[in-house]
Length: 225
Image 1 (tube, rainbow, N blue to C red):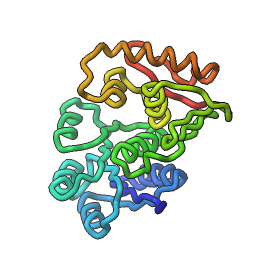
Image 2: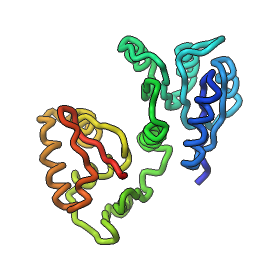
Image 3: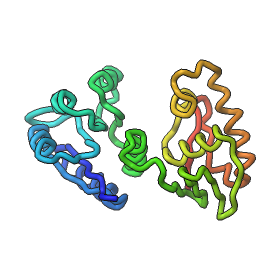
Image 4: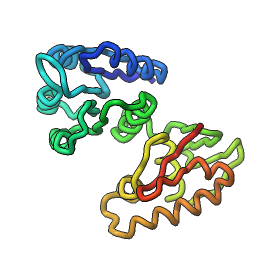
C-alpha cells in the first residue's frame, strides 16, 4: 500500500521536525508548511493528503481560517494543535469539523497513535489489517486473536473491544467514548457494561489482561511498555 501523506502546519520549525520525525518512523510521507497561507497552497496543489495536523496560532492566516477554508472543499481529517487549553477554543474547533484537538505540550507518540486511530476510523488504513501489540495479534479479516501464538476465543463484542483498545493504544479512553465507538451511538444502556466486558476480556487474556489499564473515574487505556 502507498504511504499516506500528512501535512504538518506550524510556524515553529522545531515542532514540525519533532512531529515529522515520529510520523516518518511510522511510515508516513510528511509535507510541511510554516504558515496558513502556505498550508492552503500545498493542500490544493496535492490531491492526496490523508490528514492535516494544524497549529492554531500562526502568522498570515491562523488555524481557524485554514480549517474553515479547507472544510468548504474537503472532509480531510484535521488535528488541531494549540498552546491554549480554553474550552471555548475546543468547542470552536469541533464546530468547524476538527477531528481531534490536542493541547501543547503533548507526547509525539500519543499524537501518532491518534493519527493512526483517525485514519482507521476514516477507512484510510485498511480495517482488515493485522494488528499487533505486546504479543497480541488480531486478524480482523479472519476474526482471530492470538496471545504469543496461542489462539483465544472471544465473543464478538470482546473482539471488537480488544481491537478498539489496540487501535487506540496509549490513549486514555472514557467509558462513554468506548461505548459510542464499540456499541455505537444508538446504545442507551449503562456505560458500566464496559466494566463487565473488560473484566471478562482480561480474564481470557491472562497476564496480558494487565495491558488494559484502569483509569479511575474515567475509563481505560491499553498500554504496552
